[in-house]
Length: 379
Image (cartoon, rainbow, N blue to C red; front, side, top):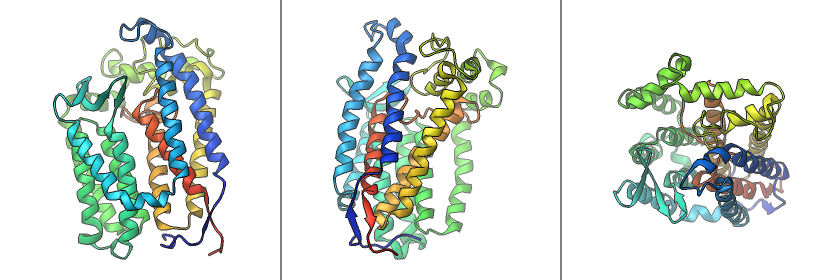
């Protein structure tokens, strides 16, 4: 059941220290591992000036931006976002359209997902996820009596979700498309939506996802390689097989910080999508377990905050943020260990930064903002 609609029973309090410190430790670990995982590729790249700390310097730049944005998201009154929710969503949809326009959106590796802004590439789909969460939290709060209505409670949400997913899949970006869908349906379910409609969307998503996979040869190769990457270890299964080699090489204690062999041009995206594999190789099972434990603490504390939120908008905002971050953690680690097919989602707070790092830090800022409220009258 959603909390009360009014916000009169809350007082400012301290931020949740457990959530704050777990995220800060993950950010610090990410800084170390980005440097370690990227040295080889930085020294060998012309665009990096052969500087070994090229990616670390850029990562620190993103961290500075992200820290400022996280602080801003933490100190504002998050309830003010509700007044601008429609404009926040509209800005996201406009940017998702513009990024698909030639000479406006930047193409890299066959995908048109970024705006080039000097030294920074901005990925609007990362902003769009936060925008969608804010919009849904506002919509479900305002339409609380109509949530179970098909035409007035479900169809508007389905239309917005469909439009956003269509624009993201055109980039193409299947990972974030699936993530937006999961966030939307999770928030709809938590807000009290009809279980039958939730189940119907879940069943409809299966053939759509199957179609998207079958009509894109590279996605089909990923699915085949996921089943057994060693059948084509030098082709479609290269990333997954090299990731498993890295994790196996680390053993219990690891080969030592900075001593990974797989980052030496064996494992692609070692400092981004597969950084968890480098952690497992260099820091071993213990290091990988420590990372999983930190994320577990973060997610657990996030759910505790959600249980104590006293207004509907803050409650749904926190739910959306935790679903977004949790799914990214599960998918990234699942891909690295071979439990899930390759999706291209970075590991929050740890992977080499950019738009994903900045907006994940903004999300944490909003969670900390929500945690600064407390119920003073009991319920």
